[in-house]
Length: 178
Figure 1 (cartoon, rainbow, N blue to C red):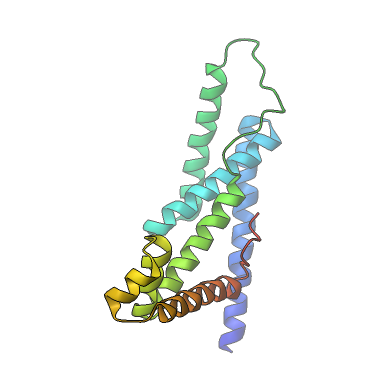
Figure 2 (figure 1 turned 30 degrees about the vertical axis):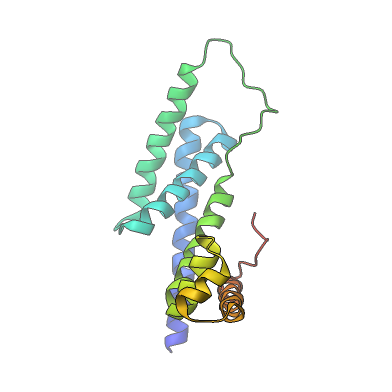
């Protein structure tokens, strides 16, 4: 019965999420009268919700999303007013910033990797971080820890396998970003 309850809870959460997305999209496009710009603002709203939830608790996600969306709509109109009269933006100008989906994908990957590093054996984590992030040569690490350079490389190889496995468990294969 627990499994049925969990399935029902997931379906209910998905239905609420869909309803919130529709309501947000209607709210934003009703003010902008531009479906594409409205979708961009809804996406940015979700990015900000995700960022905020990483560090704080949100008791009412819908209220938070509508407040963020309202502010983004105001920012959109402020930017439009700042343009000189008659100025048009070229459609072929590519934005150098990553798309919202890419940002969310990369942040999700970072969260998964941080979690995998936290549960990794301490010695393996220390060797991996010193070798791959700090760039300390394997021989130096081996000398500091009283190990052979081959053992250091073996720990790095296993750490990479652990990180890759953590991503694969979440369906986030390496190199498959947006």
